[in-house]
Image (cartoon, rainbow, N blue to C red; front, side, top):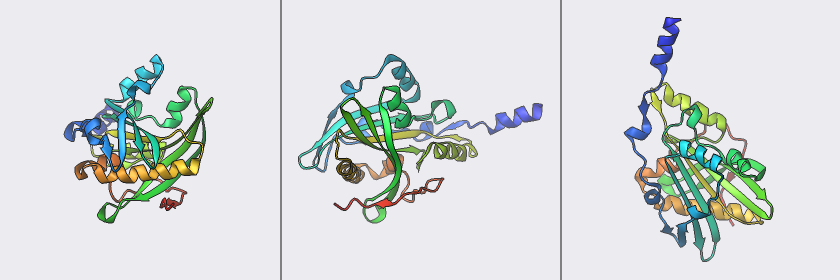
Length: 233
């Protein structure tokens, strides 16, 4: 019994990736203006109940909410949430959990790979897509989660990546990146989301791209049953 307790104590991760490689402020990491997109703060529009806000305050050390407008491409909403401790109790929550907690109905959940970027920065990013509805609001959502420098396509991936870091004695950090729009033409929304992500990649500093988009050779822990989306429209 004492041996088991000692082994568990020895195997408990001690090093915080967030302390060794601090995340810069999200407001600096994600530019407000780039490639024709003009962003403005939308935190005042993020109305959540007191109990949900209490959970968010525990999970995330940084959050950012912006509305971006483009003269030709329209409008998207970006929400980013950073948590420095991706342990079981404090892992980043997925929109499939957060949106129903606010009264939304979720449908059309799917996994896809977005192929974007150019040259050495070309990436195959596993993302989740879904539609959130409440009353007349119809919100297509594209999101991904990085755990350390790896993209977690599913909740199982989050756990497996967490364990992968744990065997090295490290507690990883995590970043949720969510792009959405109020749009009933869903294929159009997906195309605009991909264009926004592609434009964003080009302006995030190279030193921070792994934290936002995962490593260049991103391969999720579990195989994705999906097709690559090139976004040719």
